[in-house]
Image 1: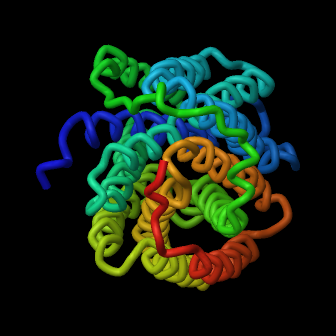
Image 2: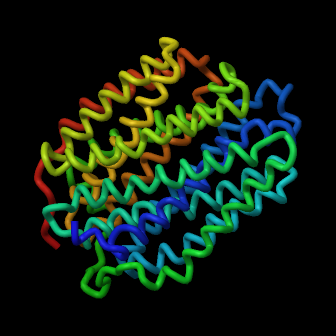
Length: 378
């Protein structure tokens, strides 16, 4: 595919992968955080750890909402350049954290950086890609989330051991190497954009449908994957469980590529519906005790659904408010995402996955209500 060049896909994808890597650190250091903060015997330990993911997503909410709008005004590349050091340095600074409030504030700052990057890049790639492969390009962009998460998982096998696991946070500094390359990021012409009120996205009926899908997708994803390494540790030894989690994450890659292939064949909403439906089935298999197969299917179909969701969202809006529309939907998703990890306080493992199974079924049905036509006008 000649249009899938370095500037249009690979470089934005590396910035995307940096977010996934820095997002993963809490999931893979849950046990270590509990130990350093002496939370192992604290009845509120699960709530406090889940809250670290939730506060990240609160920061993400504001980052997406505010900077998605600003990216429509000042350009996409400037937002990404500011966001990268923000989330990388906030993550690396967790190496120095020795109190819960320190962890809390650093994850909030990292979340703002995450929220600045993802909707901005999805809008950018959607604008720059040729019409006939636009959806495929955005799905492949989102596939870099998997590469970042897999790299984090692989690194955790060697670092998140009882001694020295804090060094894991410092490995995020590697992503600062992207800054010299940022000048090569493609940019859209911001001078042609007129001032558009944020409330304009509310005029579209499908806005409320896509917000519902985003909410459910984020709630289930962060609810499941925040606790997946911990749940696996109940069945397998620590190192073996991390290897199993790493292996299941590898199945995210073919999931993305299948979604990328199908999205131009059968349409965005049908891919989203199918992959959400099969993610619900995977969650049911997991809660039924078919742990490894269920986890593998979760990785395969849930991340493919995310690719379809990122592809369809900016296409629901005209160019002048793509960043605003994508950012608003992303922000609503973060509300669901901050709720998901906290559900562990209310439900046991079976109840948790049953909740997400039914939620994903509802989300799949909602996706069929989305329009099939793309917004091409300016």
